Length: 214
Image (cartoon, rainbow, N blue to C red; front, side, top):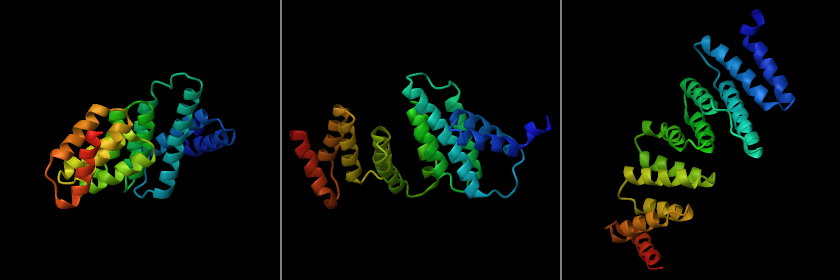
């Protein structure tokens, strides 16, 4: 009927579901509201409320995932697709896509979709000229969020963008050791120990040689 096409009705239902702590219902209703609003997007979007809506939706998906982890059951098969849809709409409307991409990446990583997560994390970076510094910043953030697998990739990307920076290799080797990829860590340390670097990297180079002797 008439009410089924009104986003406000679905938003109200989502609010009530949220108050009752029924996250899976909240996700369904908010998704429906945002779907209807997407059809009739105004020219000017309120970025603050846009971010709040999509963060709420992605957070609801996260709680659905957590509930399945706790009961050791598989999450819904279409969950990754829903996360991607929400993130893509969010970043299409948001002048700064970073938040959308980071939120999506975190959830996709937890679902085991590491490649997709990496694409979301790095898409805002590719628009920037000084990629190495951005990749390094991303690596630090990922390390802080206890995501060593993706952080290691970010250091590798930073080094690819700035192959004269020996520190990126050391940071990468440290993470490879941490995640148990010892052979790769040694290969990176070897490259570091044998390479010719600017004098400012002497200490890092010597450290790599010492680590290889251990």
